Length: 93
Image 1 (cartoon, rainbow, N blue to C red):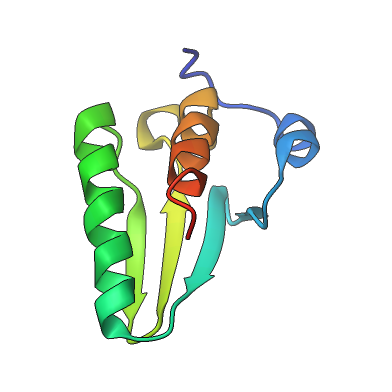
Image 2: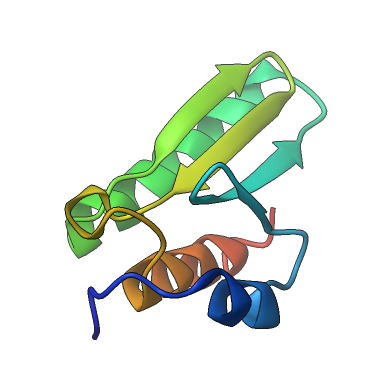
């Protein structure tokens, strides 16, 4: 899987499922009924991130979690970020 930074045009063409390009990262906010469900999502996401050795930035709130993926070593968004975003989508949040 390529870890070369994608162009903004390439990123925009691949955005789906509510993911946005924000300040050089893929970003999506997930809403939950309560803190318990938010933390269950965060724990599942953490397991995926550990397995893939690719860790997003998270902003965790009572009923909301904002996920931001970028590849710091590439200076932006890569195929790896899209692959991990797709894995997060598979959680069905």
